[in-house]
Image (cartoon, rainbow, N blue to C red):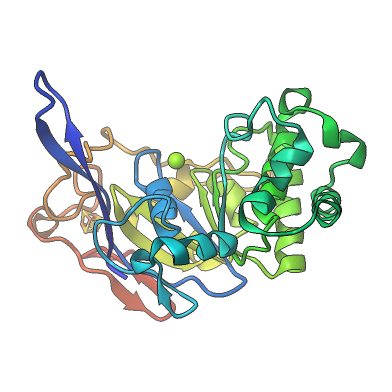
Length: 315
Ligand code: SF4
Ligand code: MG
């Protein structure tokens, strides 16, 4: 509820504070148990910051995040340790997130060593079980990360994230660094694991074609704000926010025989998050802009099971 994450920016000769980036600026939404909620938007819109703030990898500036009846933002260090078992993250770059000097079995076992008091045998069994779940051969367990392909490395990252039986996983662009041919394998794996383990995903992506076939609902962010949120298929078929419409039109059409969509090009650069535009943050790029948009920020309005922040939602 009303989640804000601001970063002071220090620049200039004397390291003086020169501004504040409103990376996440007053965002509220629900995530339903066992669903996949995708958060999409261009780079720099604040989607990764939102994901990290929700699981307390970053401390929120304001707001609250209720998980199993508790406000994640207010947990003590001790409670936070418990929370680490329930909430995990899968990173974009599987190579950067794996320690190159550790064997795969040790990488996957690391959370078990840190958080659980279980014996060696039990730990080895759990690692074997995890490797099987993510489709890695047992024979690989004593190899090092550099001996694996990008897709296999992401499987290792996923196994590690699953080690403590989490309920909620932030997937931060988990397939963006992978070849297109590998992406669908990892997506299918994530889907299978979700069903088997009753997982809830917050799936962060800039790729609208990946998200369409995978998410139940989709939230569209622009410059720290949630512009639109709703069931994925409805949002794709009838976007209510002009920005959503442009993002969808810009995404490649996965079916080459599909009728070509109307070409829409966004004018202008993304404004600086240090100095976001007044009123509607999208107004400098929006072709439907009217006077009120420049001075008055549109509030989120609810339309059935969808929400949109625009003075003039599309028909
Ligand atoms: Fe465009 Fe105005 Fe809607 Fe913003 S509020 S998206 S500028 S029509
Ligand atoms: Mg990111």
